[in-house]
Image (tube, rainbow, N blue to C red; front, side, top):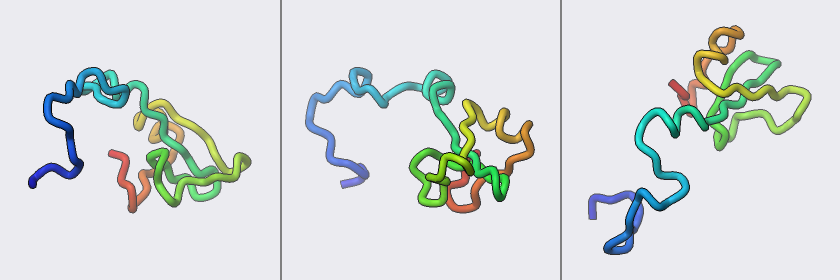
Length: 78
């Protein structure tokens, strides 16, 4: 089996809420920035800050970089 996940036969991917091709998915992505060390992460990254005082949200990688944040070396949101 080459698939990472089990997919039921006949499943229409386009009807799944997380499925999208290209830009629309990228536009809806939220990146989490750490104000302390100036890094940004995917939402599910174990190193993304949970403390709201250390946390900032970005809607794009460009926005995070423009504000001086660097990508996390673990989740690598590039």
